[in-house]
Length: 214
Ligand SMILES: Nc1nc2c(ncn2[C@@H]2O[C@H](COP(=O)(O)OP(=O)(O)OP(=O)(O)O)[C@@H](O)[C@H]2O)c(=O)[nH]1
Ligand SMILES: [Mg+2]
Image (cartoon, rainbow, N blue to C red; front, side, top):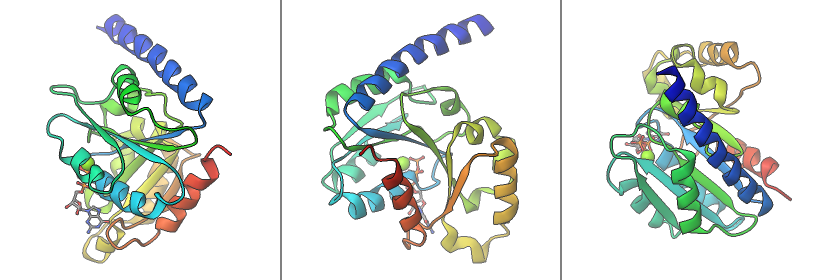
């Protein structure tokens, strides 16, 4: 079993390297959004698209086991989106994403968002060729998640704490959560946002702007 897993990941890494080379050659910033189901990835994306679409060309790859609900939500903003249905699969892999990139053909110097399947486990292991994994954790999920699912927070360069508008109704301890995240990944950056109210989103946009190829 260990050997099969190694073979699958090695194959995935080859496809991921090809995706990364293609994206970097065109100055495209690809961000892989990972989280448990319902943390607010699509809500954050639709809001970000509205605020950023005057600044950069944008495109979105949506991963879900079933339905095209999320791609439909993105297309309603006027930005091209391609839905990948993974069926029984619990994550996107680099081969699927390579085909999606071919289909979308994002323009040079654009921002490409990849919304992974909602799952805090499997997507951590699969490089898609992105520049960064961004972990979204909503405050309704509990502050101990970085310790319970360390691979995901170890793999991410940024943790976005979403739904902070709900903090007054919860016992979520923001400082404790950040401490747990830094225990598994001392370098992780943290932003506190509400995709609903827009609070904190300027920090997210600045984080993106700093990473856009010039
Ligand atoms: N109060 C509040 N609700 C939010 C916020 N962001 C998202 N939601 C709500 O959370 C629910 C799930 O949001 P989605 O954006 O669909 O979450 P998702 O991570 O894309 O979900 P999957 O794609 O199924 O994994 C929706 O009812 C959103 O309206 C927020 O900042 N505050
Ligand atoms: Mg979604």
